[in-house]
Image 1 (tube, helix red, strand yellow):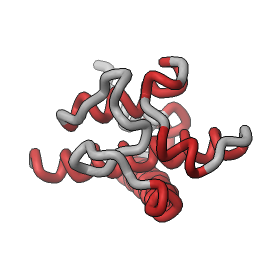
Image 2 (cartoon, helix red, strand yellow):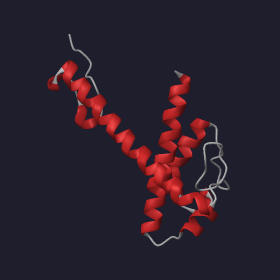
Image 3 (cartoon, one colour):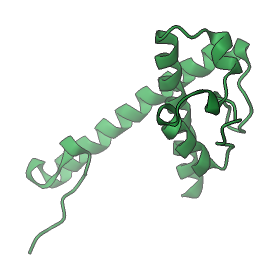
Image 4 (cartoon, one colour):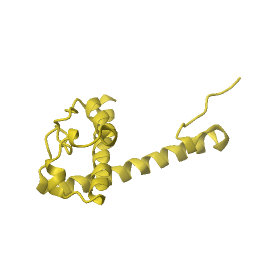
Length: 128
């Protein structure tokens, strides 16, 4: 089970990096700037999700750590960054699809009145 959890954490880390990369590219950053950046180059509020995922994976999350890192915590080279961000977007789509399937299964099993899918809360606790 720990191995499966690690897979999901790695995918979540990759998806978080892709969201951050897209946001920075939309604000005029270049791939070269992204490749050279470290976590400390941005306000913590922009990197909190990436830092959290890295901490859970045991990867460097200090201000000097690369902004975009592979599964081993090493900086993604600028020439590989576009592909890294693309894989992250794909991982994010997969995560969202899995979430929707799981929520639908909960509604099917327990009924819409017993599920709080809008808030992502899953099955409500029984009251007796």
